[in-house]
Image 1 (cartoon, helix red, strand yellow):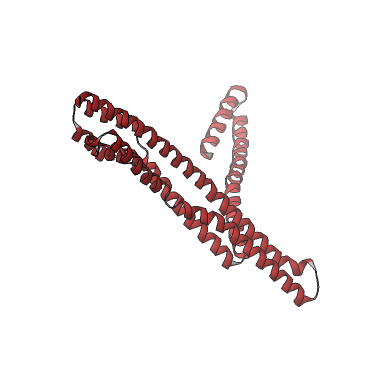
Image 2 (cartoon, helix red, strand yellow):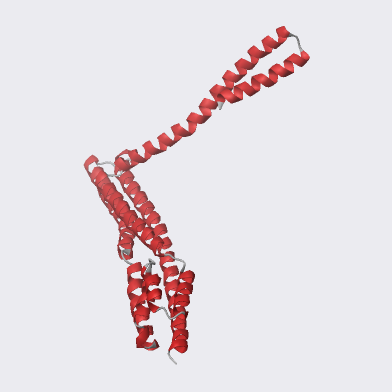
Length: 268
């Protein structure tokens, strides 16, 4: 990028110089351009290196604050964040795989049942992932036992699938609650250390109190940050669970309508 900038600047100035001044002036102008280009390159280097140095400084400060915040409690907060994020990522991947085009699935089932092909409809459900397909398969398994039996089967199996969607959410809420609690525990211990230092020194000076207070504040800050991060993921997961539950309920109603039409057509 710097070479392109230098080439363009030098070319433009040389062209202008050839039109307005003699050859000697053009050479002097080229030398001046070269000096300007070198100065511009130094400026570009400073601009490029500044964000890198700032990023390294932020990373270094985080490590320093982590160490200063009492490695024992800060490690517990870090472990809570790692496990909580792992559970959140697992739920997000699972719920994303559960999402399907339920409208197309029901249309395919309806097309098969209109032709009297129950086994074809079942095969469509077996070959489709997700709780909606599983619920439809359970309903089709009892299609010959009456609409009431199908409805009870769909409702019962829907409850099982809803429970599977909410799996591990209680553990995520546990780590959301634990993170600030660990931070507050570090705060209390930091305060105790501050008073111990005051007692040993026999003097209430800022220098004596600062160490314990610093540990207390750092652990609290990190605990709250971890809880906020996990809370964002948790709310996102809840929104996906609610969307899937709504999709299952709507699909169940549509399935019952499809089966009712099948019974009216083939079981007169």
